[in-house]
Length: 132
Image (cartoon, rainbow, N blue to C red; front, side):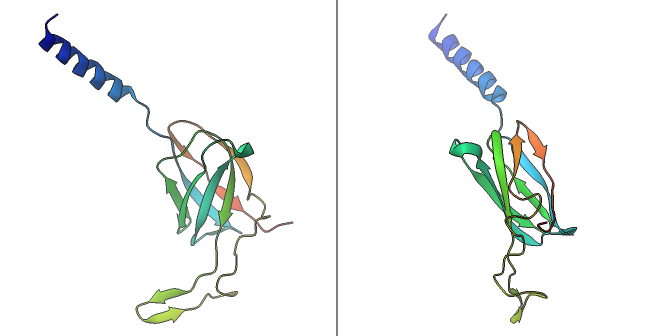
């Protein structure tokens, strides 16, 4: 085989292998507390037993989407705080509670649950309720 043919064969093989490479899994879903969408918060997926890479994202208007997740069993922590919002030059205080107050207790039913992240695109919805 000539040097030129070897070069083309290498490029063809590399292109084939690159096309077969798996994409990182993605995770998306909705998050509610007491039946209402969490307006603004965070969701974190931590590896069980500390083995692996944690990942997470923002919750906005009751939804989250994470494009690069990691496979395996995870504990999911959801948090949301009462925030001061700004509308132009006006400061809008929270309707209820104090600014900075945690809206979703760590011990809320459905928080800190275990899930398993599998390959591909996965939808995981979380519907939390007040602690019992």
